[in-house]
Length: 164
Image (cartoon, rainbow, N blue to C red; front, side, top):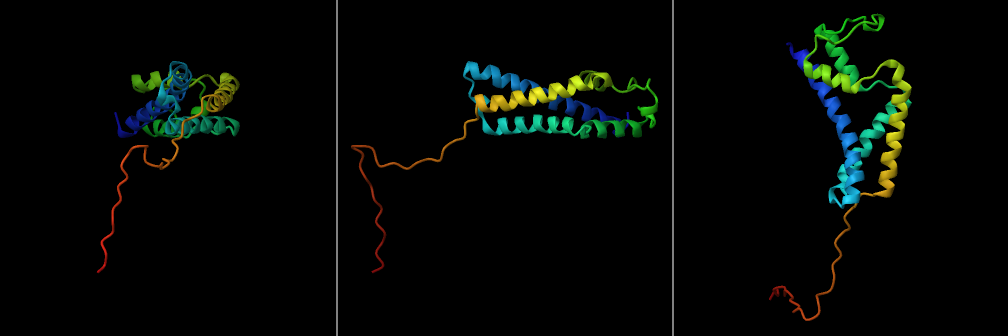
């Protein structure tokens, strides 16, 4: 196994993790809202989650191939796992890739005839994430407001030293 093959396998696993974060993150937000989980309103998580699906939806609108897919395919061509003229060969496969890579690609990729359904699912899911942002908004912390001392509390002052 070459470093190129390992990098391609690593990329397909990263791609699968990306998809899982988007899917299970949304599921966690929806379930967690009803169960009172505080983390579902974490602004860092919500902004990252929103950005992840918006990038995917934008790529679908513009018909841009995912950079992770492009990079993985180029690495597999370089490693000899995919023929350089793979677009001309309808029977090409990644059968000689690792088990993990075949499994991850099987989950990630679908036949070309399913692309319209896949794109529609990206749009729907992006809409669901936007709707969830509105219905279950992230909680941004407010700046602390200084208040007067509580009733009965001793007020202390620090006197500056005189310059005499």
